[in-house]
Amino acid sequence: MSQFPLFVGGAYTSQSPIADDEQLMNWYVEVMESPGAVTKATLYPTPGFSAFSTTASSGGRAMFALNGRCFAVVNVTLYEITSDGTATVRGTVATDGFPATICGNGDAGEELFITSGGVGYVYDLPSNTLTSKLSSGSAMAGMLDGYFVSLNPATSQFRVSDLNDGTTWDASQFAARSIAPDAWTSMVVTSYGQIWLFGSQTSEVWYNAGLAPFSFAPDPSGLIPYGCAARFSAKEAINRVVWLATSVNGGFQVVEATGFTPNRISTHAVEYAISQYSDVSDALADVYESQGHLFYVLTFPTAQVTWVYDFTTRLWHERGSWDAPTSTWKALRTMFGCTAFNKRLVADRQGGSIYSQSITLTDDAGGDLIRRVRRSPAVFSEHQRVRFADIEVFLESGLGTTSGQGVNPQVTLRSSNDGGKTWGNERSVSAGAQGDYRTRVRFRRLGISRDRVFEMSVTDPIPWRVVDAFMTVAVARTS
Image 1 (cartoon, rainbow, N blue to C red):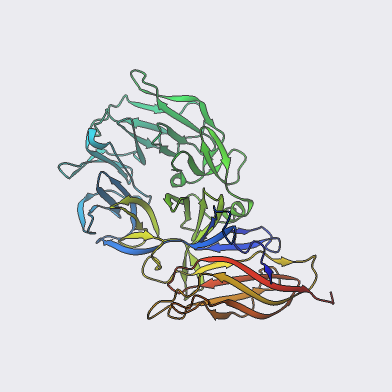
Image 2: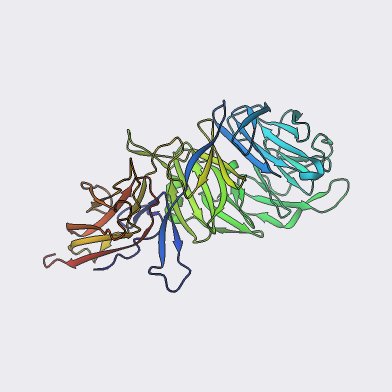
């Protein structure tokens, strides 16, 4: 047997699937950092979910945690979530179908500023009271140097509150776009002192210049030749800003900017996929870090697709929920995460639950099993016929459950002889009951093909860790 080249790899489905039709669903790639590792990279399972709190509303729209307290906007209700999962109603907000935003000014102001349905609200943390302060035109918010910042896309203006006081908004403390003609539609206020303001074709960066009477000014180096194609796709990712970008020249790319220079991080395959969606303006993004990986999660609700970029490996993969009755993938239901009580908490976009997210969990949101798929690169030898004697998937075996689903976990394989256009029957073998660590996952007598693609899938609730794959092949005598 010889190594199956690039069986462990990211997602890349080209415009022509016979050129490349690789899929990676609900796994991510981790590159081994030790020279003594048995492989260069491994597939590890994406996290599962467990219900942490249940609210009486449905449709999560924002989450935020600060100084030991956690808040969530679910539909029109603001909840405070405590460490034991109790959800307490703290007020009611407007809604317009878009996500809400929440930010805080810390101990200096002891306030949260919340935008929802175009209205800006201040939540006083000591008294637990919610008050409307901006009656309209407040679509997104952030906090910089003690000032709350509110964006109004309808007028292409942003306003700032008084210092450490979200209850006071001087009407003269605003800025309007003048550097470029396209209106501001989105905003990210970073933790490192910048206000990123995105138009539809260009963007710019402002900062606290300490000026009077208005403290903020555009950075002279901060005019960016990319706009934002989806308002809620723009996010800070520790030391950079990342968003779904477009420009005067059209097209869609996912870009990151460290400093003021945007760099393309999407692949041609990802860009082609996005270009086929009927609507990208509703895309939602989230960013989180786990096990040394920094992930940018980009969900397209209309297209029912979730793409994830790993800044650590610079590879893309997909995540989603498998709808068994229709045999289709749905976008992730979870979004708007925050870190609270030493947990990663995420809201359910469709339901009322707040979930705990962890790689130790194996269930999807709602309690369904997580289906994981790896579609391999094509085995191709100058379009000659190749005979496949066997394939072994080298994974961590013997992890079966003690009872119920997963006692005898199964690995399922199917193959395509036309580069992924049509598929043959599925075959399944055991990955080993609990303690059967020497189980080998092997498939034999796999036939002959000129352009063979294999697809492996698993559903049992165990931690599926795929290390490598090997195969025995030979070029057939007749061509």
